[in-house]
Amino acid sequence: MAFPSWLTWALLPIYIVEGLRARANSLRLSPAPGPQIGEIAGMGQEINLLVVGDSSVAGIGLDHTSNGLTCQMAHKLAQTTGRPVKWRAAGNNSATSGQLRDVVVPNLPYTDYTHIYISIGFNDLKNFRSGTAWKKGFGELIYALRTKYPHARLYWSNLMSPLSVPALSWALGAVLEPRRRMINSVGTQLCHERGATAISVTPGITAEGFCPDGVHAAPIGNQQWADHVVKEILDRNLLGLEDQDEVENKQHQMDSAL
Image 1: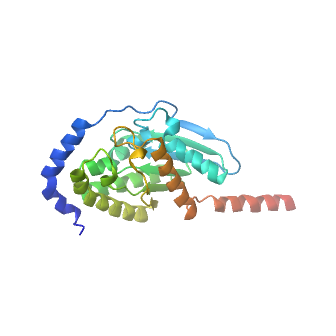
Image 2: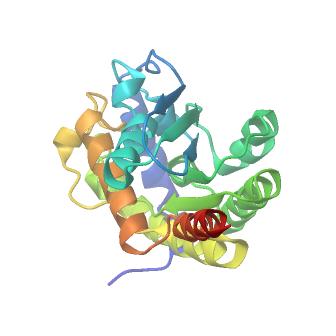
Image 3: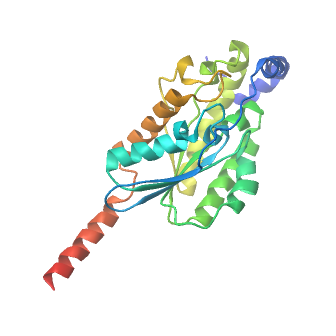
């Protein structure tokens, strides 16, 4: 039976021992070389995509940013919608929600982004942040992005189970799993309350979807991740550009009738 996240404080010694063992055995990989911005041609209203987050957005362990989450998501959006897509990746290794809020967002340019995807939570999880700290950090991050980019649609994905992360031992994953459920529950509620959309956990990512360090997503993992996010956005009619197309079509019809 699942137990509440606060009970995991009693397992803190296991977390410390297993965490130190995981860190000692971990590979230190570099961010991916390549551009952090790009454009994909298409027809119709442009999607201006910002992906902001942690090392997954920085492309840690990848040979090029073209295999990263942001570029994969941009190409999937262009492929499935036929629209032009402009994209920017703003990823920072080991970033937490509070660091994105305090350091990254204030230094992003004022651009008319239409869609913002947030990849955050894993470092808050592995750092054993409390529910109160996560609520403050992530909740204020949503506020900061909403204030700076009031016309953008915001999305955030629930975290996958740490038991599925190859670099983490079963014991460490088991200690972190209740906290992962807490982060997902609080994060989903904050999205609902503060004008963002919570996306479900990306299913089916196996060990082959991770880089050699067993923590960061490999190209195939990023592809599965991007495919799932884009599919859910489209299946739930969350892209938000259809109304604009209808306005433009009606305006064109009115112009033609004059």
